[in-house]
Image: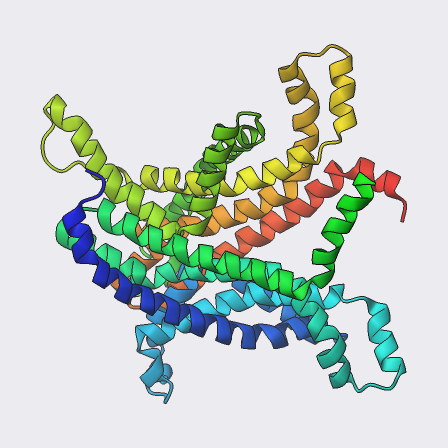
Length: 240
Length: 238
């Protein structure tokens, strides 16, 4: 039997509670990941060689490492050092939830930094020079010329990264956090029925990703007005 | 370097870690091989003129790409045991049957790899210039010969960078199979950490091993790529 209706009705509240934990984690990771990724991306494109090396190194390490290794390093690894256990940060770092946010944020920042750095580089050089020629300050150029265009260019890649964060949060169930994945596993261990909870959780993950994909598509149409205008124009040219 | 004796071969945890590393590589190779073949077959099915087949295969890709890797591994491992039990029960085998963590993991990772590789192959096959295929057809070559001798060699060049990326994804995903008890690299490091309480030391070693694999892949990729595309670079000029 693949799906058991009785078990399904029983697990829905647990799974929904787990879904809230997952969504909250995703929100934390995306915000903190972005805040780390932005300076790293700027460093990656900097003129100063040491800064550039730092940016590239950060991206190499946090994209190359499996997220589970990062999570275990923070959760199991850091308490190995007495000075960490005696430091003020220990109040936070002994919480599995904090460890999960730290590990997932660093991992996401590695990918996000690469996406942002690529988007910054793709902004046409002439426009930046033009803005500087009219006497804009460097910050003003960044805010008014580079950032808005980079946001458009990064949108699709960043949307994919959000999907990976949603899926990636499932590993937190390995450090005792009851997220959606953890809730489904708990049901399995209580009922010995793997299909009902895992497939139901799968449907919820699918729904989250589907909603996000829609949202990115909508944002894309909102941010690329020329795409909306260009599509019928090309059609007309071909028809005419 | 007080931590170094921990990695000694035999007396320390060097042999366990090395065995785990071997499992990680073996699992990566099996999953990548099976998954890439699955991805190529899926891409061909998606591009076929049979609409229902194409729809079903696109659905497979979209669903698998939306699910957490861990969930698929659990589903195959726990579900696989249950399914095997149900299959073997009529044959008189009773009690709990457990599928191997390695094979459940390998199949799960292959299914995931197939879903991503199909995208890479589909793009690569579409990118093969139509004129080349038509030229081959005008010579009277059979369809499968055109595919093997013309489409595939050119498409695999286009697919190469994408497949290199996916190879790194597969290596990283193998770490998740430790969740169902496989003593791969990260699993072995966990055992070593549990026994010595030097978790950081061992997981850091795992991190370094993964970064070495990733660096090695990148270096091999850029060398192979310049050779694969040497004809294009010569012609491109600027």
